[in-house]
Length: 542
Image (cartoon, rainbow, N blue to C red; front, side, top):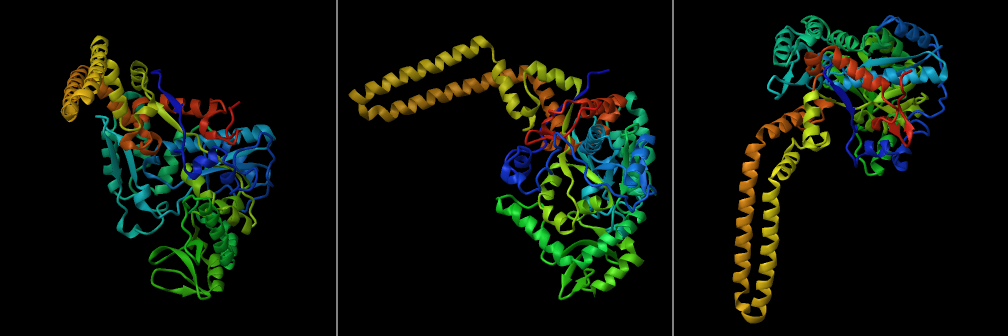
C-alpha cells in the first residue's frame, strides 16, 4: 500500500445559491418544501407504490442490488437516485463520488427504516449535447493537463448521445488516452476494462454503464438508461399529462424561477415562455416543444401539431418523447418511489426552481442531498504538503501564493533579520531627517523624499535578488508545488471536476478504488458537503 487517500473538500464556492442552501440560510431553504433539504434525524418513509417499470431495462451490479430493486419496483422498497449523462470514458471523478454517495445514503435509509432501499444511477441518455459529454481531462506522464474530445458522427449531431454507437475514431482516442496516462502495473487490469468497454460499435450508454458498474462492482447499485424503450413506454402516461397541461407546467417553472431571482440569485435553468418541458425527436433531431396559438411547434422548420395528435403519438410512438432537465427529476419520482436523491452543485441550483413543478404535477418531492466531494491526495503530494506547511487549498491559484510564501520562509534567517533591521533603521533615520528639514530647510523636503524613495527602491531590488537566489536554491521544491497544484487543481479547476477516474486507476489500480470506497462509505457523517442546516446527509456504513 502506498498511502494514497481521499480528503474531503467543500463542494461549492461561498457566496452563491448552493452555498447558501448548504449553509442552512433560511431564505434559500424556503425555496423548498419543509424537510426536503437533507435527511431528517428521524426518517419517515415516503409513500411506496408499485412502479409500472419492470426490472428488464435495469443493469445491476450484484444479487443484493437485484433483490432490493425487485422490492422497490413491487412497492415493497424505496429508491435513492443519482445520475449523469453518459460521459466519455465514464467522466470525471465526481461521477464515481455520486454513485458511492447514493449507495451510502441507501444503506442508511434501509437500516433506519427497515425497508429495502436501492441506489439507482439514472443515466440521462437523452442528452444531445455532444461537446459537453464527449470530452475527458487527464494528466499526462509529464503532469500536464490534457483534454481529449470525440467528435460526433455527422448523422448523430442534434440527436441523443446515449443510444449513439461509438464511431470508429473512439478506438484511436482510447489508445491516445491510455498512452498519455502515467500507468503502472497495478492499473493494467483496469486499463483493459476501458479498452473493452469503449470500442467502436458499442452504444455510448452501454460503454458508460460498463465502466461505472466496474468501479462499483460488489456494491448494491442499479443503472437505468432514460432512453431505454421500456422507460419511454412506462413514462408515456406522464408525458401525456404534461402535454395536456403544458400551461400548468410553464406557469410552475416560471414561478420557481421567479422565486430564485427574487432572492437575488441567478436561475440555473432558463424558462422560455411557452416552452413545454419535453423534447420530441424528429427528422431534424431532438427539439424542445413550444406552445403557439393553441398548437405545439414540433421542430425547427415551423411544423405544428395539435395537443390531441401529440397525445395519441405518445402511445403509438413513445420513443420520440423525452423530458427536459427540469422535468426529469419529477419523472423519476413519478416512475420510482424515490426517498432521496444525490445531487451535484449545479443540480442543487436548478432543483431550487422545481418545487412548484413537483406540486403542479402532484408528485412528492424527495429529499435532496449533496454528493460527497473529495480530492485524491497522492503520497508524494502528502509528503510535500507536510514538508512545506502548505495546505491543499492554498494551491487553488496554481501554487503562486504558496511559492511566494515558501520563498519568504526560506530566506536565511540571519540575512532576513538584518534586512528588516536595515529597513527599520532607514525608515527611522529618514523620518528624523525630514523633521529637521521641515523646520530648517523646507525647500529640500522633496529632495529628501526622492532620496528616501531611491533608497527603498534599492533595498527592494536587494530583496528581489535575495529572493531570486532563494528561488534557485528551492527550485526543486517549487517545481514540486507546481506539479501538486496541477494535480489538485488542474487547469485551475477542482480535481474532481477535471480529471478522469482513470488517472488514478492507471497508477494505483484497486488501491484507488479501495481508498475511494473507504472514504465515501466509512467516513463519519460530518463530511462537510453532506451536512445541511446541521443535518447529516450521509451515514456511516454499518
